[in-house]
Length: 291
Image (cartoon, rainbow, N blue to C red; front, side):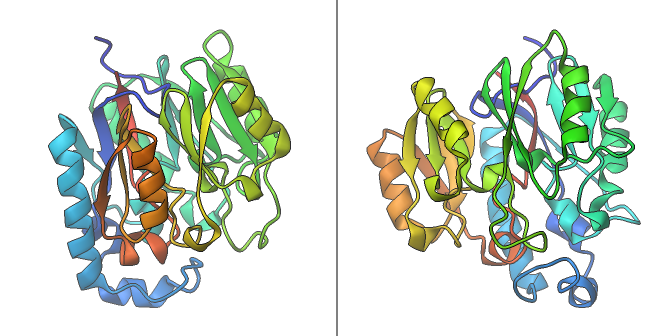
């Protein structure tokens, strides 16, 4: 089996990178000083967040053989807990991103240090005028990557990624709606989470028509999130393996629809670590190897 590579959103996760809440948040005082500037919806309760993250990490460790934890790092903040966004891991090596949110620009360097220390090869980086965040991308299959052009990921970033992807995978790009504007993060994965090779949880009201048509053309079963569960992040679902998914508690309609589609559903509490900061289980994880 290959040692690294995650050109899939649904293959069984064998290796993963996370950053524990305690190492991202630092303390209640740190959270109190910056949650408004970061665009969080409410003040995060540090103690409750620790309990929630422990529950989340317990599920991850029970299903993933190797878990790598990013250390506490000066210069990164609470957003660094959302370990997915600063990088990607292809079959050819890792790519570091120049993130569109200014407060997160140092996170890619932190991820690169960890990757180098564990022997993961480097493919390249998005640099200069290019911006990119991994929340704006989803693998449709092992050779096709969908990327959203948003307030966080720009056309120059996509151009650079296409250069890096040459001969390895195809990049399809789609415009992301304005929605509530640049102050509220809307990524491509705000409205889609693949949960099996031909199935995805979606919020179609936000989807570019051409993207939705591409999924249907590929034979995807689209499991719709109801309006009342969009704000509670029912669309953010992590596939631990095909048909086994992890989602935030409090979304019973979407959970039921996943189960009706044949999925096994695991849950964790995410009021503090997910809802307030705008990042669910996919955001909290960076798979390094999917089988």
